[in-house]
Amino acid sequence: MTSDRRELLQHFLDSAGWGRARQDVLRADASTRSYRRLHRGADQVLLMDAPPAVESAPCPPGATPEQRAALGYNALARLAGPNLHAFIEISSLLRAAGLHAPEVYAADPKAGFALIEDFGDNLYAKHIPSNNEEQLLYSAAIDVLVHLHNTPVQQPVPASYTILDFDETALKVEANLLMEWYWPFKRAAAAPDDAGVAYAAAWREVLQELQAPQVLVLRDYHAENLLWLKNRKGLGRVGIIDFQDGLIGHRAYDLVSLLEDARRDVSPDLATQMQATYKAEMKGRQKDFDTDQFDVEYAILAAQRNAKILGIFARLVVRDGKAKYRSLLPRVERHFAEDIGRPALKPVLAWAKEHFPEASTR
Image 1 (cartoon, rainbow, N blue to C red):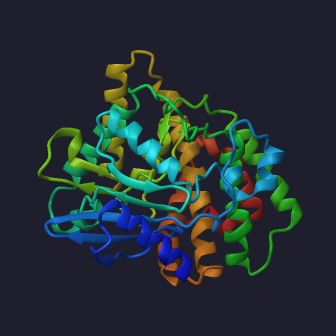
Image 2 (spheres, rainbow, N blue to C red):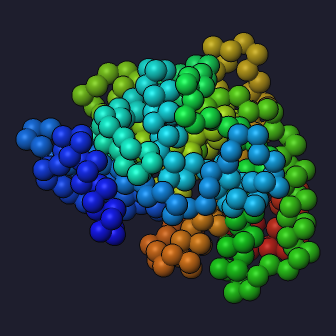
Image 3 (cartoon, rainbow, N blue to C red):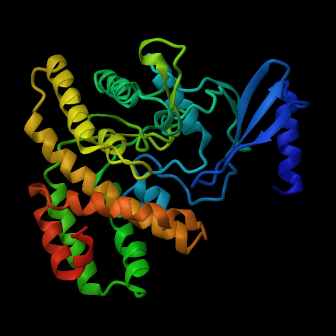
């Protein structure tokens, strides 16, 4: 942190009444954000540090694909980046819906600082290995999704941030991370043009089977971003973090994120049970809920998401020097190989067998 930014931070903390708080630096994640736990007597909060201008610009409402391409990856994929308005607005929306997102106590979006509610450290990923409650925690996470997917999305008014659609442009550019980063990671050379053209064509065909976006999608809904708040009741037991990139998207996406977790194994039996629970609950609330169409979309979005993650993890290893992500790749490779074996992914499977056969077998 530069001296100028340290001065900005101290001014922010002083203004919020936390200038003399004891600070503990927390473990960094894969993003450009960082966190500190602040202690002031018996009180504690989290400081979110999201430096502006360290990532490419977010997507302005109404921007064309060409305009988004000129702005960079964040605009193409509709990532909020360090835009704290996104976190603040989506947190408010989730809380208004009766879900447990962090309260924002103070924020300076221009400087990139916020003080937010501290849910503690009891992540699903931490709690599950030492407690015999995996089914309980995953069932609670399904309850949250069912509730969210039956709550109309209300754009914030007045809007400092507009929640956009998870559109085809975003889906395609994410899937293409496999070609940009994972292919050269595995082959030690860039993908040939013909393989890239065929890959894009396969995804264009597959993505046509998706219905229009319908619900708020949090995009990273998994065991590292959910906390078990066992002293609370009902939906409040699930603390939700890392949702600032949320978009209006497809109902299957966050279920895929939860059950095809890149960081921990979810047993096939539990995944099947949780999918069945979700579909039964949705069918009970929405008589026109089409389970067959949902299964198609689940298959497509599973393959799309894991293609993206293969690219991101390869990029973290190669470009960012974060070697720990290498050990996570085999799990994601297994997910992707299984995903493209489903009937809805025939074009992508055919592409893999011709151009990248190691991606289709695990």
